[in-house]
Length: 357
Image: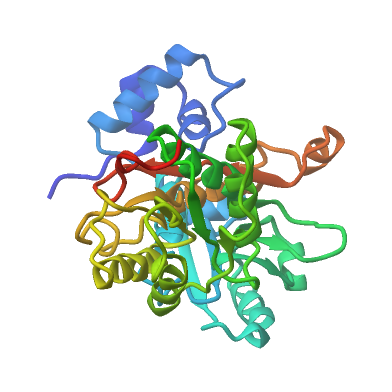
C-alpha cells in the first residue's frame, strides 16, 4: 500500500520549511510566506494528493470547522433549500462542514436548536428562512459568529448581519421589462400583507413607472395572496367582463404560483398568452416557471447566491479575516442585498396591436 503523503513530503518537494507548509495550507500564508513559495506549496500538495488532517487542524486551531445552520422549514422545502446548498458549497470549499436543524415553522424550537448546535462546539451559526421575514434572534446566536440569510433581526437595534434579495430592484427590473415591450397598462398581483417582500416589490413596480414618467392607476396593484387560486381570482377581477380597451395588457405576479392562476384565468376567458396578455412571475420556482405552457418569464430569486454570500461573510468572521468592530466603526449597515435576475421566457411579448400607448 502506498504511504500517504505528509506535510514534510510537501515541504521537501516545494523546497520550503515544514512550518511554511502549515501556514499556507491552514490559510495563514498571506503576510507570512512569499507568494511564489505559496504557489509551490499548493502545487506540491496537489501533486502529492495531500490535505491537512482535519482533526489535527481543529485541535491546533481550537476549532471544530463545523457550522450550524438552523432553518424554519428550508430543509423540507424544495424551493429555498437552495440557500443551504449555496452555503454548503462555500463551507466545503473552505474545509468546513455544515450541520442543519429544521424547526418546521415552530419558533418555540429556535432556542433549543441553537443550544444543541452550540453544545456540539460549532464555530458559527446561520439562520435561514423560507421567504423574507423578521426573526426574533435566539440569544445563543450572539455567543459565536452568526449571520442571517433571507431574514432580518427583529430587535429594535439589529445585532446580526443579514443577507437578503434586493426586492425593490427586482420589482423595478420586472416592470422595466414589460415597459420595454410597450406595455403601459400593467397590473400587479402583489402577494400578501404578511410578507415584508410584498411592499418592497410594489415599491420597485412604482419606481419603474415613476422613472418612465408614467402614472400608476390606483386599482392596478393590490394584494392577492400567494397561491394559484388567488392568482386565478385576482386575474378574473381584472379581466372578466372587461373590454379589451379597459383591461391591462400585462399582469405582474409576486410569485410564480400566482402566475399559474393568471394563465388559467386567461385560458378560461379565451385570451392568448402572450399575444393578448403578457404574464410575469417572480421566484423562478423549480418545475413551475420553466415547465409552464407557455414557459414563464420571471424574476429569479438569488437563493444559492444568498447562501454563498452569507457563508462567505460568516467564515471570514470565524477565521478572523473580518473584524466585526471595524465593520461597525466603518458604518456597516449589517445588510448585504443580492440582486435578483430577470429570466425571459415565452409568457411576455409586445403590447397587443391597437392598445393605448
